[in-house]
Length: 252
Length: 161
Image (cartoon, rainbow over all chains, first blue to last red; front, side, top):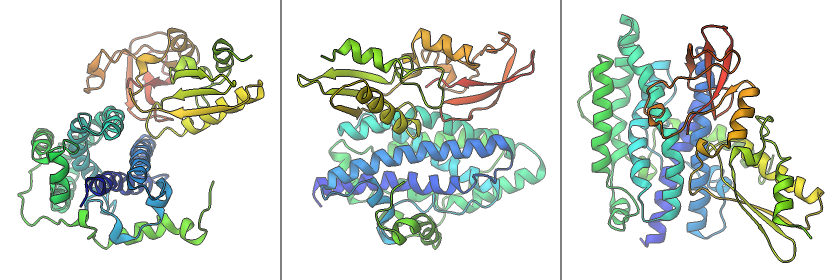
């Protein structure tokens, strides 16, 4: 794989995570447990989609085949999406929504920080914008996880259950295949073993305060980066892409 | 002949569509203004929040304002780097935000705000520092929701970024 192809794939991986998580969070719009949270989740969805748009636009430029952000978001099928399995998991109860975002945020912030030093100027610029927003995200999901874990017996039980259920998908965030390794050598992508240390520190600190138990790394459900997904992604795409598939080229 | 000074004068009229109390210059999103020999104006702006939907509107409004004033051609470029910070909101902009009922952002040099420690935010209504944050996320991407414990009014705060 040429470096150009690798950079295209890598930009898509970053973008797909953000788009799919953003879509999941936007599903809460109008259904949030309290008004402030409804607004918080839609705000977060907006931050994620903003970063995704920049990354898709860049991926399209790198690929050089004239695909824009919309073509990449709306006209690829399931196996062509390279997001992690974590972000496509259903919202479930609020504990599941918060834990999913918390695991992603704890991964995303150190990743964005590391990407600001990427030798690729555009990835670095996009990350520099995202890193400040990501700090607000970690704070938001951590606060809720602590409140749930260190809350009532029921909120604790449900937070632990969400953590146990979603933990298996967290491994997908740190998979480094040959594509990734090549970009690490070129100084474009960060070494994920290093950002994993920051992820571990955040997870351990927040879980300790939340009085929750960190699940053991058992079977980890990976494969998202290769386009292998859980059954949920297809349904997300069916909804998200419906308009562009039914009315090709439709614009607002 | 359209001069750079004239363009800046015109940009004074382009408001932030979500916070119409301040204009794009006061918001600090205009990074560069160039006028080419043929009169074409190239305006470089930078997004506030990455996903802020107001950016597209701002770009369209800038084009409209300049074209209507007789600028022969206008191009609005978007630049991500260096990343926008609330420190670029001018002093006039901050004063206008406050008068509009939005607590202006504190300096990002006060990094505690980003790291999670609560800053002291004065109520834009009564000036009391006895306030509490209700939610870090407000009516737009750039604002947090606060409440004053003295006058009991809720208010928006422009988040430090």
